[in-house]
Amino acid sequence: MNARGRIPGIRNQHQVLFYALSTCIWCKRTREFLEANNIAFDFVYVDLLSGTEREAVVEQVRRWNPSVSFPTLVIDGCRAIIGYRPEEIQEALGL
Amino acid sequence: MSEIPREKVEALYQRLYEEAEASGYHLNPDKEFTLGLVESLLINEARYGYWACPCRLATGEKQKDLDIICPCDYRDADLLEWGACYCGLYVSEEVLRGERPLQSIPERRPPEGQRPQEQPARAPAVSVTELPLPVWRCRVCGYLCAREQPPAVCPICKAKRDRFERFL
Ligand code: SF4
Image (tube, rainbow over all chains, first blue to last red):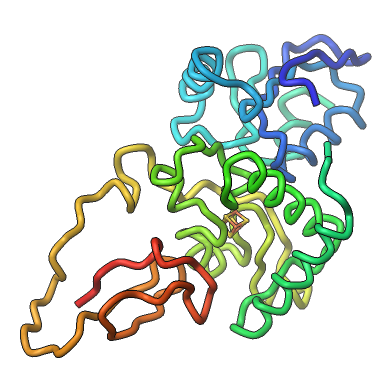
């Protein structure tokens, strides 16, 4: 599994950043939901990073979500959705 | 995602299922979901040497991750409030019977600096000087026992000795 990457999708009008853990089932559900809805997004599996790269990403997550929990989805750099919340994602992305 | 053989995952699932049922806990009845988490526990065992919670970011330093070694210190409170542990590996009876939906729940673990293992070992709140033995408490399930040292494994929830604290 890649630690970082981009999933292309037809719905690419929003910038969607997906912070996740590779072992977390709610993260997996969230990713499946994004893919099933053809949403373009960038992903980072924080547990697969190490050293300063990991610290930097953890700090990014902390800004949106002080408890640094996963999944954290950041939309257009202005809103975070924490946990597996399909309805909130739908509403935020206008699905 | 897996390098863990399916038989190993099934075997651990079976063991956790039996242990849970024997002490009043329940695994999530959605078997694919649960097998996914059991597999993640084995991935974390290979990675860190212990069962770091699959849905939380472990540091890899056991002492720092102690409260999130499965079963974590937060499981029982989450079962009571939300009907499931944070990952959804363990569920309450209502969820088991389908009377309550399983959902992704908020994180109960306090931020760094406020976690149980980061607190200095406190003297027991009540001082009972007449006790012939100290009393130890399992931080996972609350089991209490009076003996020289805590047991190697909690007889109720199977947490290891390092999850016990001095209670009295
Ligand atoms: S009991 Fe705690 S550590 Fe274990 S899977 Fe559930 S939330 Fe994670």
